[in-house]
Length: 68
Image (spheres, rainbow, N blue to C red):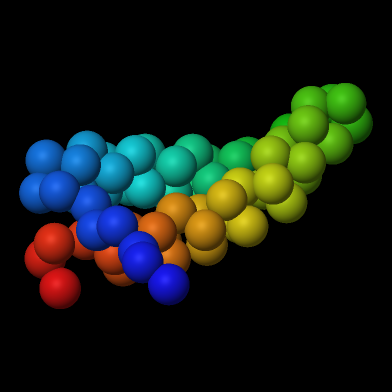
């Protein structure tokens, strides 16, 4: 099956998105331990659960870059 590769500028921008999403994931995970409001804690937990598969998919797509 034909798979398109990311162009160099797309690779750079996508790398920035992955870095940003990783920082957001880490912050949400760390904040869970210091937040006392249960609604906010549930929201942070939901964010972590949704971010992990999203990051996995982004990293898989990133592997199709021109840099390989």
